[in-house]
Amino acid sequence: MTRSTRLVTAALTASAALLLAACGGSDDHKDNKKIAGADTRSSASPSPSATPSDTAAGRPKITLPKSFQADFQGWTNSDPKKQAILNDGRQELLAEYAAIIEGNPDSKALAFYTDEAAGQSARKWIKGFVDDDLVLIGRATVSKPQVSIADDGSGVLFYCVDESKGSTKNTKTGKVEHTPQNSKARVQYRNRLDKTPQGVWKTRYSETERGGC
Image 1 (cartoon, one colour):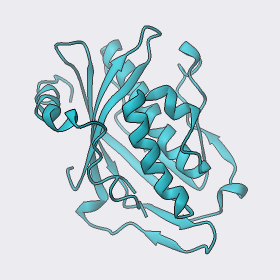
Image 2 (cartoon, rainbow, N blue to C red):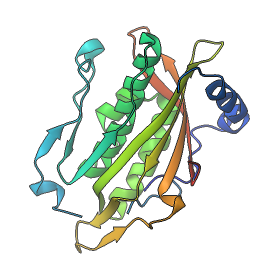
Image 3 (spheres, rainbow, N blue to C red):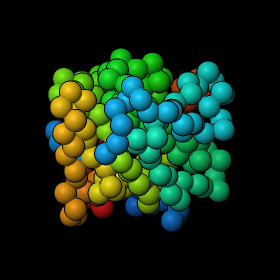
Image 4 (cartoon, rainbow, N blue to C red):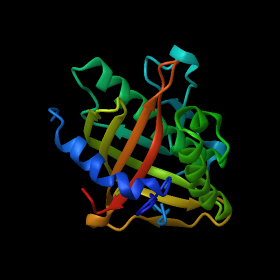
């Protein structure tokens, strides 16, 4: 379901070492697009997936249908600034999931939580699902967040997504493709975020490594 390696900009490769170093120093604890079931999106009842702070800074409300849920575990930090990075990083991932299920690469929620380069890459990834008539079903477990603040003030966020209970469903044929039950089902996300004047932590760089967790 996720990109095995998603490069948002060419500069990400050069900055990967910095991301790793920043996360390693924390004191706290899509080439491949199939996560590979349930009802079609038209019959699913949406359930809230938003954080309590969603209304601040005009944050959009993001909902996922009952047919696909994301379970965030250990997504807390005692440092308010790091918690803010976690909150907006969480919403960016939810926005991607919701855009895939809605078949909407131009999601306003996704644009809200990504800058121009990151948003363009995410839209391309989401369009791959839409072109193949695929939606997400099942569950993804998002855990082991590592968050830190770099010397330049940007946020660094790593986390793991377990896709072993997730699948994709073809909305035209009804065919379900399950995610293989092996180490490749666990994907590590590595994100760089910048804070806007409005207080929103937007994703600037993102890459994933399947089996990285």
